[in-house]
Image (cartoon, rainbow, N blue to C red; front, side, top):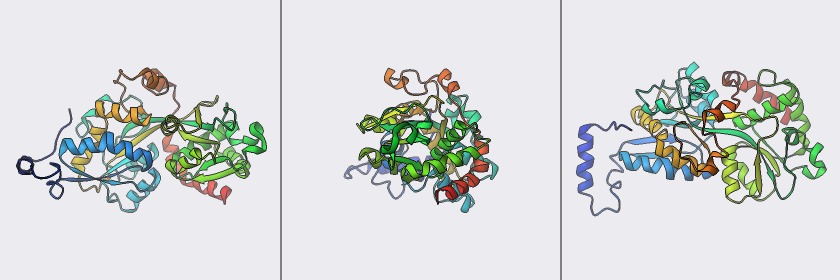
Length: 361
């Protein structure tokens, strides 16, 4: 059960205000100035629409508070802001971080430690969630790195080599139809790890990836940072092949974009989407309440069904079969997903970004 941190005097005020507000269009109107405010930083695009409907608006209604939504930045950019401000970035909840940022937050003491005392629903999370990050965040969502392709223009890719060395499978017609992501998006890092694996490397041996990237460069048609920024390229068929997060890929496929979604034969890498509370947050109690809310059973069900992503807790069993067919809903499925050493990524990402920039310059 979620808890409320409203003080008794505050609760009485809200109850009295609500009783006196019959002439207003909504009971929340009168509390707009007086209600507690929480600033939540998260993604924009179609994610924002779904997140507001399934998670943010119900939270505001239940707790009688106002959320200010900040959709600026990728996970790495958001953490850079936390670091630059020494933990006071202007938002209370960093709602969409990845494991490398959570690890840095613990190391640099810029994210609040989180236990079941602050977030009771932590007792329901996957065992894996306690392994992929330290206790300075929660994992509320799981995805994996997929390949997407234009089903009208090219054959289904079977290997990561079909993306990284596209001319070998598709010939000249694939030139300028391949998308890359900037390494500020962890999707780029994961795809580069798969490139290294094609040549006998991996997260601990990334040198082969730079040769593969250099060879791919002449085939690229677009390079973007944000996952949402890639969507128009898929919809208008400018791009025919790209790595992409499984949730967004499934979402766009359901929206009738001309794409297919696949896991190449070499496998995939899992991602735990995380949230944390900066040490300089203005409303920490409400921030913890919001993290607990994100792990609420009903909130999890509503969000993940809408966003086509896998849940942050494993005790929900009544998923539709179509959802279970493509998402992580059992311990067996969770154990079959590879999760890279996020501490290595956190420590080496800056150098990898520099190498990427040198190749792409």
